[in-house]
Amino acid sequence: MNQKHDQIYKRNFWYADWSFPIFVALFSAGVFAGTHMYYIYKVGAFNEVAIVALLEAGIQGSGYGAAAAFGASFLFARVLEGGLVGVLDIGGSILTGVGIGIPALLLGAGITLPIENFFVSLLVGLIIGAIIGVIVISIRKFTVGQANSTFGSDVMMGAGNSSGRFLGPLIIISAATASIPVGIGSTIGGAIFYLWNKPVAGGAILGAMALGVFFPI
Amino acid sequence: MGEMVVILFKSLIIGTIIGFPLGAGAARMFHAPKSQSMGAFRTIGEMNACQGDRASHFSFGFGFFFNAWASTVGAGAFTQDVAHRIIPNWSAASVLRKGKTLEETMHNPVKMSIAGAIIGAIVIGFLSITTASIPAGLRDVALEVLAPAADWLINLAMPVIFWLAALDAGKRSGFWGTIFGGLAHIIMGNAVPGVVLGILIGKGVDDSGWNRVTKTLMTAIIILFTLSAFFREIDIQLIKSLNLSVPHWLDSLHDLINPK
Image (cartoon, rainbow over the protein chains, first blue to last red):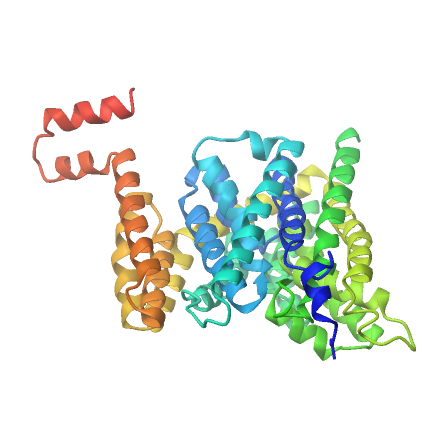
């Protein structure tokens, strides 16, 4: 399988190292612009509810520290690992690092233009992605075949995933505090999603919204 | 109505430019490590699991699509599954043909990236537009419920979860996670960044010792903490809580850097 001639892997746009930064740049531009959409229209962040909530906390004024450090350390760990193993994990590096961490760093420093303007967001994402792509390829060139550390990104990923699970019950508690009908809707929604093997958080929000139609908070 | 058109326009652009490299990256994963690719190990595993069968690829993506939709409508978050599972698997489903080998279809970056661009635009456009068409009152309910939950998650649940993960990950991660976690809550108001950095240092040293990378990292963390503490005037607050008087030179240094 995959016995292509070595030349193709060196020269051909679709397979070669030199084109890799272009692909990362495009992807990162889209993800960064998605965060712009979320910032302006509250829809469009390419991440889990729990991780987007980190950024939202910053937007609401409780500080960007958590989102920035969480995103930036993922970016660091995944870029290093990407060059070493040949697969760049887009979840940690681009979706969380570029989509949440870098916007949080910028917003925390008071730089809002790249997140407020769509075209600037595309451009900034493109540049960040190209830099990441070049770094990954250089790590790949300098460390051929060396095994190294992933800096505990598996530990963080595990913790990140279990935080996501906490959100479901927390949403139901919050809905039940808001009002009785919304609380009932949220409870039923969460229970149904659990039976369907879907995350409880999604059902809890939808259930709260469904009852919120008839009984506004 | 005007805003709706803008959202659709932006979503189509975003969907196209993320779908294109996702398709190419996924196809390149089957050529790793010869070809540097992007995606995730779980994505390769899952794509291999339904290898060659259009219906499996499609329904695998569809299972996650429903969940992504709920999360987008409720909280504006697409979930990572859009990039990890839905777009790669639906692109694969759309390029697979009877009588063609996998090398000609799912492992071919040219076909996969074109399919990815089209599917990306459709998926992102659909998710954003359906969410944006929900009446504002309904979204307010969602935000009203979500905001306190997110607040508890960030200020209590997440620090504890990350902290416990650090303690379980070994003596070094636990030690540095505890030190940096406590300091981070004092300095930054949230322990998560500190615990994450503690895990980073702890596991880095576990795996490769105190080499140049881990030492640089440690220095960077100390500088980060010192600067944040200084800019948030933690030093002055500390001196005041010890019932001492703040030296004049320190006050003037703060005024110099951060004029009021």
